[in-house]
Length: 434
Ligand SMILES: *[C@@H]1O[C@H](CO)[C@@H](O)[C@H](O)[C@H]1NC(C)=O
Ligand SMILES: *[C@@H]1O[C@H](CO)[C@@H](O)[C@H](O)[C@H]1NC(C)=O
Ligand SMILES: *[C@@H]1O[C@H](CO)[C@@H](O)[C@H](O)[C@H]1NC(C)=O
Ligand SMILES: *[C@@H]1O[C@H](CO)[C@@H](O)[C@H](O)[C@H]1NC(C)=O
Ligand SMILES: *[C@@H]1O[C@H](CO)[C@@H](O)[C@H](O)[C@H]1NC(C)=O
Ligand SMILES: *[C@@H]1O[C@H](CO)[C@@H](O)[C@H](O)[C@H]1NC(C)=O
Ligand SMILES: *[C@@H]1O[C@H](CO)[C@@H](O)[C@H](O)[C@H]1NC(C)=O
Image 1 (cartoon, rainbow, N blue to C red):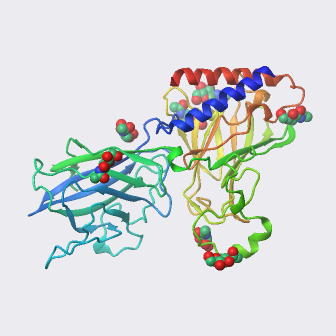
Image 2: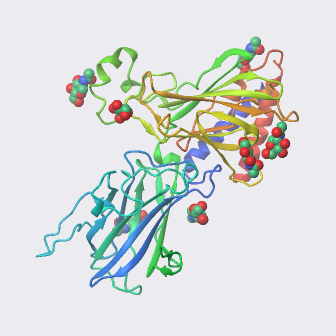
Image 3: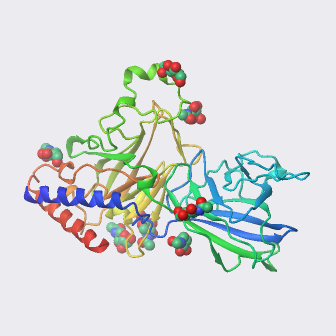
């Protein structure tokens, strides 16, 4: 009991510290970032033409529909003469110009990707996906978004160009913080026959990192659990995602009138639940074989106003080093640290379940997974069969308290041990972080 209370205290302190810190460090993806690269391709009479390429190096955090929005502050009085593959949402005040009117005169332009199906003469390579960018782990070849712009009133040589400042990136909501641009070695390009290399006239980089706390002060996802060896269903913790929105949530009786009528209204259309999370991940330990065990995973959407496109689920569990088969989800091991193979990403099969539909009869996706037992480590005790960490779309899900995990019969004494190892590991984490 002492251990339990202690573990709770320590873990909740750790949780608060973690969230209050709002730092962009993610232990499951330590180098994850979105890099925005500007390659100056040619000088013009009053400026330059640049290709801007955004690469999502994050292993499991994609940019989902309605896509990214990028902004910056010009260093001087620059204007954009033209743009391909993306558009500025406002033209701004170009009244000083006669004859040739610039495309955008905003001091702080706001740029969005073009939609799929944009006219061919407005496209460039890797554009026009409506701002949707998969994560590096899902598809490294598609984790790129590009556009081209012609800038005027800037310098016309690498000595006189002033880099734009204060980049912002929404992906689609808040969460990213971007560095100031840094001039780097010019990018090399290979000609299409692969026999000649050319290089950018000048290149600068901006690195944007994600912080869950900036994206949303309260969590957005929780985990519930069950098992074949115990009939208890461990629900998500009450108010796991904060109960401050309780007044605005949608009860069963209101559903009929709202669905189909006001689904386009702004703001979350959350179903009233005891946990108040838009997403619940359920982990069910389903079957036990001699040398294998089987888990069923379900993700449920409690938001009537949002379809999750190209969703991702990240799980940390020591047995993920021996995944034998994953049914109806894609699986990709993630090894943030070369030595441990305990983290992996699940994501939907294209055109089958890569879209997690809005709350309702179709608002869930599920999969089963077969894991091979390592007899030295495998156990039903102490909640070993349940995940250590779960992330949905790159945001960490709230787990039930460790002493409530389903226990196998006849292991009533197992809990203090579980909790003491937990508090020890929490202390260890604290020591490592501090
Ligand atoms: C951004 O990600 C790339 C690719 O993983 C990595 O090489 C680079 O060091 C990262 N940058 C930062 C500032 O973390
Ligand atoms: C850029 O950001 C810095 C620091 O946040 C701020 O002090 C400065 O005023 C910003 N500059 C512009 C032009 O917005
Ligand atoms: C739908 O929205 C409109 C205006 O936003 C509101 O007047 C109406 O009551 C809403 N309908 C329902 C069923 O909530
Ligand atoms: C979700 O997707 C379905 C099918 O594409 C569509 O009918 C529905 O309107 C979408 N819902 C929302 C909230 O965008
Ligand atoms: C990690 O585990 C997966 C199965 O879960 C396996 O396919 C892969 O080879 C492992 N990778 C390493 C480097 O051990
Ligand atoms: C589990 O995976 C590890 C390395 O990934 C391997 O050494 C070990 O033999 C595997 N165990 C079983 C039971 O397959
Ligand atoms: C099932 O698990 C719960 C929660 O850990 C525990 O309180 C209960 O005793 C277990 N039931 C059985 C039959 O062991």
